[in-house]
Length: 151
Ligand code: NI
Image (cartoon, rainbow, N blue to C red; front, side, top):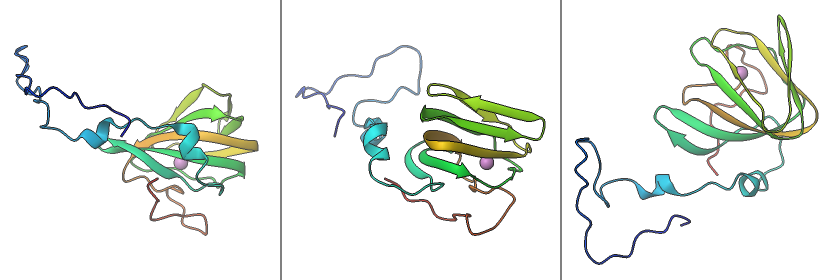
């Protein structure tokens, strides 16, 4: 547990800010507050194009993935997808042109837009996308992953 729970023996009272949905200590999911070390998560696997879930919020998952070489052209009917490059360098190919992403840069591919990620060197990426997102979108082939590991 990386998030340290306060050790106060006295339960802290609710802070009355006028925001009625403020939760009292102990009334929420502490696991959600556990910090995620991206480098540590990325050290746990080697395979390419196999996203792993590392967190979730609202109706979305946060995933880490390693890209190398090229993926398949696809689109997602209902989901926007965020790609944030942590290390390496990738090119998001779009039918209208390419976008090159360096570490610290991100792109959001809107729903319905055809795309193909390509990485000439191994590239580590964070994805944020709705839980319903299938990695190959509208395409079903040997790279499709129906179940993702949570690490
Ligand atoms: Ni996609």
